[in-house]
Each structure stands twice: as structure tokens, then as C-alpha cells.
Image (cartoon, rainbow, N blue to C red):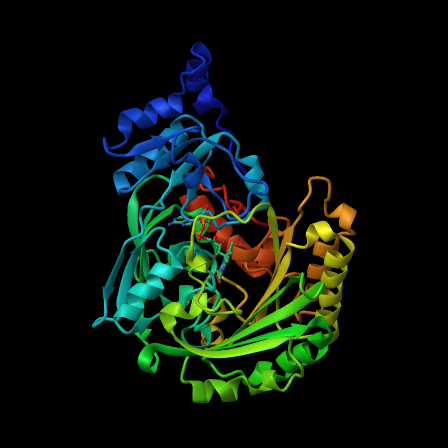
Length: 496
Ligand SMILES: Cc1cc2nc3c(=O)[nH]c(=O)nc-3n(C[C@H](O)[C@H](O)[C@H](O)COP(=O)(O)OP(=O)(O)OC[C@H]3O[C@@H](n4cnc5c(N)ncnc54)[C@H](O)[C@@H]3O)c2cc1C
């Protein structure tokens, strides 16, 4: 993390702290300035654990206070109090962001925006405006109720705005593009706490930057999106398959053959995990088709032809239930439960522009090797987003700061060490080797990673691209020269 030095600013407050052991200038500032009904939540208070829970606890930041905000005034006050007391802060909605640099934020302030989750839909104008931390699942149900849809991601509890700021990869992107391609405008509180409208017409350069590196420029107070008519009857076809890993080669060959002809409504996601009933990892695959079963059946034929499966299931479900039916979850409502931690999980990712079948098979074998040889790794997973990209690629490469429009797939690895003594080194560096196996053969110039799935160990150019970095650094210098918003995938203010 690249924090600026607050040494001079902090001096009087540091003195204040040393006078009374329990006196904390940050808390004092917040108490004096926040609206009366707002709460400052401290460690040990009821609600502190819930407000600070993170999807992954690996390298988690620590906080000495949470500022629960629900209006602009209180966000402004929180930023100002943090700045005046030289306290590093993190804006947090769902806590799904993963970043190895979080560990450097210790004893800071969490600005909790989770209560800013409103949704206003205008079906006639085809627009939706949402709050800072509205969840995918709430967007889906609100739009479904009025016969509309919009691209979202695959996990119900991720924040729509949080995902938009990096890109927003997922189902319906073949029809409508990345989530950020539907973004029309945002209201943002800049680091200097002024509020501005940002769109193609207002602050267009910042609009370019927030669509790909948006965590760097302030707090998004609300975001307005274009929305679309739902597919007929709002029904989506969903096919699940579970393959033994001996089918990895025909599976990846089928993906390679299908890549160029994938119908726009189709999205394939996978989950490679240890299956204790089979005493081996298995490859679960979901193919979701935004349209009627008759068309969906044709679209997934190439998966039907792969060969024997351990199980398979076809279903047609309303869009608002799709997430609880995929990958054999059979309508299990517990997948919709949010604010649940999945423990210490290291996340890595690589995008690829072409499928090298041997490399994908080799990566599968390495995963098998990892969970077979090291039982403490068996809660780990490997996932794939292989969704149609017609509309993603229709936008010019330079239209947004998100740089990887030509990617046809994104892998993620969720690496879980169930003990305290294992590290990457003790498991043969398999996580990074799996990532390298894919990126070396990805048809890209080095590692390309979607920032929302990234680890924090990647070079900046792997997240933002070499060609965009100086433009992004110039924006950072204008809007956040002191690096107040540097807690999550920070940009530099100068890039050679
Ligand atoms: C289980 C899981 C599933 C995922 N699935 C998908 C997927 O299908 N598609 C996809 O594209 N991505 C996906 N992601 C990645 C996700 O988009 C990123 O992790 C994103 O940063 C999460 O945002 P959040 O608001 O949910 O989480 P948070 O941790 O609350 O936010 C992450 C960071 O984003 C910034 N931020 C969030 N909201 C605001 C705001 N209103 N204003 C300013 N800054 C803000 C803050 O810096 C914050 O720390 C997934 C992640 C996980 C863990």
C-alpha cells in the first residue's frame, strides 16, 4: 500500500493520544461531528463483528472504530476525522474485496456503507439508481419484479457498485456487456469531500477512470444504470454437470471449440473442488442460458457430448432464483445468506484470451496434486467464468479503464490453508504455479488479471494494463494526490 505520510498533520493528535490513555482523537472527532442518530461502533460493541466481517480473513485489516454512515454528511465527517487524525480508513460495504495489502491497514477506521442499499427503478425510462452497497441479489429481485434485468455477478452477496468499480463480470454480459458498460452515471464524494456527478457528459475523464479503477477516487454515493427488458417470461435455462477430472481434456477441448461460436445468452461457470464421496476433486459445471429451454438445450449440446458425468441436472428457473439453483444447489436458500466469512482464503486469478487445452489440463492436474498431497488444502477451489463476450468486445478498448475486454475467460483460485503451518512454499508454490500455467499460455502479454479477483501480488500493469497506467496515475494525482483512498488496489500518482 502506498500511504502518504501524515506525520506533520498527526502531531497534535498524537500528543492528544499520549495525554490520556483512553482518549482517542478519532473517536472524539466522530462523536462530536456525526449526526445524532449515527453510530460509532467500537471493538467489543454489539455489531462490531458483523460490521467488520470479511469474506476472507486472510491479511484482514483491523479497525479501532467503525463509522456506520447513512448519509453524505456522515461520510464527509468520517473522511475528515480520519484525515485530521492521520487515521487510514477503508470504505466497506459487503466486505467481499480481497487484497493482500489489507494487512497494512491496522488500527484504522472502517467507513461502513452497508446501510446505503436503496434501489429505485424506473421501468419506463429503463434506468435504475442504487445506493453505495446494494447487493446483487437485491438488484436481481427488484428488477425481476418489474420485468427487467441487468448484468450481475454469480454471488448474491457481492455489492453491485463494488463490482462495477472493477468491471463486473458475469451472466448476461454476452447480451449487455460488463456491469460497468450499463453504468450511466454516479454521484461521488471525492477525497476533498465535495460531491460531483460523473458520467459521459460530466467529468468524463473521471468516468473513464472509475470504470476499472474506481476504488481510488472517493465514495460512490449512488449509481445509475441502464436496465433491459427481461427475457420472455423471465425464465432462464440452467444445466449442471459434474465431471470426473479425467474428463478435463475433453471439457477444455469443448470450451476451445465453442469459444468462437458461443451464443450471447450463454454463460458457463465451473467449480473444481475436493469431493469427499469420490475421494478426489471433481469438476462441476453450470451453463446458464438467458432464454427458453428449447434454445438452451441446443446451446449446451456441446457439454452433453463430452462424455460420462457423475451427475447432471437441467432446470428452468425464474431469473430471481437462478443463483440458488446453479451447481446442484437445488433452490437452497442458504446460498443467499450474506455477511458470512469463508475463513482465510487467498484469492488469485488469471484471464485468458485463448484456450490452450494442455495448459488447462495441466492446471487441473496441479490442483488435483495440491488437494491430494496436502489434505489441509481441501477446502480450496478453482472457478472459471466463461461467459459469452459479444457486447463486452463491442465497446472500444479505450472506452473504460478496465483493460481486458478481449479475455474469453477468467480463472479464480480460492486457496484455503486449514492449518497454521502451511504456506505457499510448503505446498510447492502450487497456487502461483497454477496461475502461471494459465497466464503463460493465455495469448496475453504477461499476466492479465481482473482487479476484482486479484491478489495484490501482481504488478500494476497486470491489473490496469501498461497503456492505461500513466492516464490513471494522472487522474489519481488530480483527485487523490494524498492517497486517502489507497486502502484497496491503490494507483500511484506517477507512472513512468
Ligand atoms: C465470493 C465472491 C464472488 C464474486 N463474484 C464476482 C462476480 O461474479 N463478478 C465480479 O465482477 N466480481 C465478483 N467478485 C469480485 C468483487 O466484484 C470484488 O471483490 C469487489 O471489490 C467487491 O465489492 P463489494 O462492495 O462487494 O465488497 P467490499 O469489500 O465492501 O468492497 C471492496 C472495496 O471496493 C470499494 N468500494 C465498494 N463500494 C464502494 C463505494 N460505494 N464507493 C467507493 N468505494 C467502494 C472499497 O475500496 C472497498 O473496500 C466476487 C468476489 C467474491 C469474494
